[in-house]
Length: 504
Image (tube, rainbow, N blue to C red):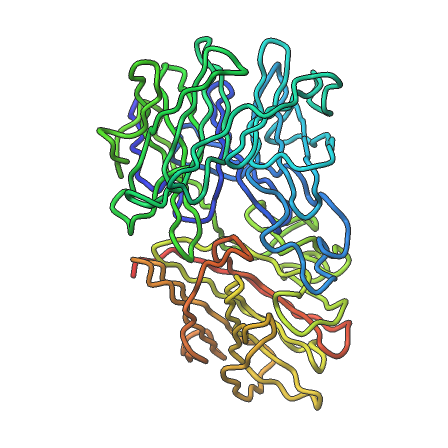
């Protein structure tokens, strides 16, 4: 059997707060998805290197004005955070907290790849939860700095009456900017191991990985620094995550690294046990490449091109909506082989536009393009392609009150509204649009283009200096959008979306 070669990052795209388990010969990963829907993507791998999206935990998880992007703010940077994934007695469990709802969610299924998930909720927040099954009892360990433990019922659907519910321990304060959080909890060979990240103000001053261990669940716990390295990249620590064991008894850590505008990207690192401590990396360093005794497989694309050739009104798993979609107003079957986005409410900015359909972007560079039929847009409509984060950039078509069409490049003017950088009169009824992203060496620029024939591309506006900001808390996504500022009921038809990773 040929062995796989881990090349870090294993995914050069925004897949933050990953939690990985093994079930049989397969590995499954869940990650933070915040305001994108469907949410809590489930990815599958045979070798920890090549991952594919196989399911989501939910299509949507709340139905209110904020989640539906109708309150003028949305849930940017909120929604589902730092989910915990576990497999126990034939059931898969995913749990997370939602800050905007002040609620803890627990989902269960017996079929992680195809199944529907049963949902339970508990009022209150369990920050960055780590789910732990221990001899018939179930716990969630959570917190930031002050680490708590709460016992759940045996089916993990509610807080257990009279169960354990207390402060477990306090983590280091002195010289620490961000105290321990991001709990991943394990019981291995009779010991309890809790993994956290912290961000010191002294020394290297970057995220680093800490492990606490104890012979007893309730302590006392001792701690050890188990990784402090940036893999040679701008002092950005590789940290936050957990560990997983192969069938052959080897252990690996799955952590992430901040990579500026493209987002937080997952890395896989070897783990060696030294004096019963799980030490990550090789001689204190996070290796960029190493062989792993797991089967070599062909990679599956994380971001895909799409000709919209669907026989039912259901999109490929690679797509996610920005916030909850209005399913009455989009279709891939109404006009066969096209994505139709119809306007249904009025807004004045792409960040508040419903039914913006997005995928991730990838480093070191990538290009996304589309062909759009604009003949049924109404006065005041704006449709096109977006590089989506708070500091967004768009290239698309605007229709004036008198029906004249303009191709325009816009950016966030600073308050969420749009600043029009450039517009050019446009006569045709269809238009080719393209965004070129460059994340190499944190260049973090995007350039915007249009064409009438798909051959002679014309750059418009100015290059966008992309910035990762915590209000969205997500790497840049590329999206197809259409919104109305004056009259609802118009639509834009997208013939295809074509995507390629490039090397700049």
